[in-house]
Image 1 (spheres, rainbow, N blue to C red):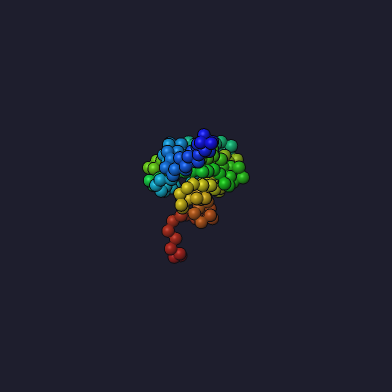
Image 2 (cartoon, one colour):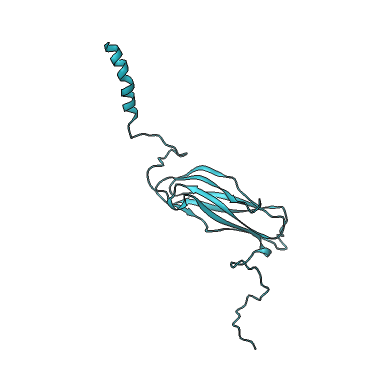
Length: 174
């Protein structure tokens, strides 16, 4: 009877021992504890601009691969977990990148990402990069991407070149 009681108590003791709130388990790649500290995500740009040169020395070639780089920096004191960094809108397949899934960025570190563009003609395309993280302001964020051949880039107002002289036009006629 005493042996049966002792065997019955072992699972209860094991359960209490395993229920401790202090563990040394980590779910991050670098072994740090993702629960301590606060991550702070900083992007290298508010909008990724990929300007493809079109000069005599470096002419645009349709179908060639061009690229742009952006980085994500962790300025916080906790591990930044990047659950997903990928193309959300590929501009009909013109934009591509290697997906960044489940990446841990240590405090005061950064991670670079390369976006690739292939254009069949001298034009401008616009797309979006999706960033999902554990940073408060970037739980599910979209980073705009604009890629264009230098001669076909639209202005900030989206109107393109109006054929004007880009000089200071005061409106005075002489």
